[in-house]
View 1 (cartoon, rainbow, N blue to C red):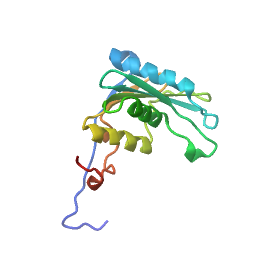
View 2: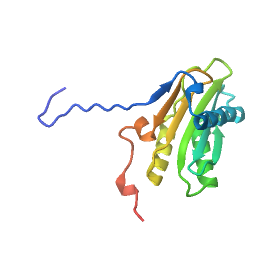
View 3: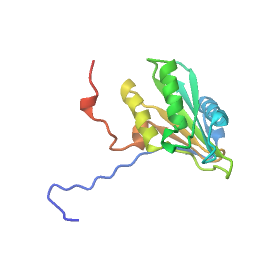
View 4: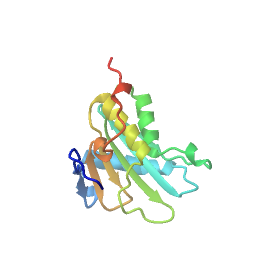
Length: 170
């Protein structure tokens, strides 16, 4: 790489908490994770056999869940995170999202690592952080094992698409 006088090396990192098991979480976080795991039951995943559940807690304490819904025409499916996110925004308009728990199970193997949102879901979650000007806690888990707690979606999406011209002030 050709170096130029204005070139800079930029490193971007973020911190998150890792727990060895869900028992180490607060009661509120464990409850939300339980809702996410229960949401896996309503998943429609005949192609991947990978059932994802998400649960959103609003700042007023309300909880909304969602599960992934696959389709033979793969782009027509939707992730659990966006199902829960959009359902919560529709049912509880004007109430910010406090946290989201995401979990997964499979019919083919044990999901022992925390599941993370895809790029589209990260961008959709970021939209709600920007809308309400508040971070959304993410609780990420598999069926068992480690759990990640991340303070804010922006940590998962550095250099996010946030075109200021599209965000019109009222």
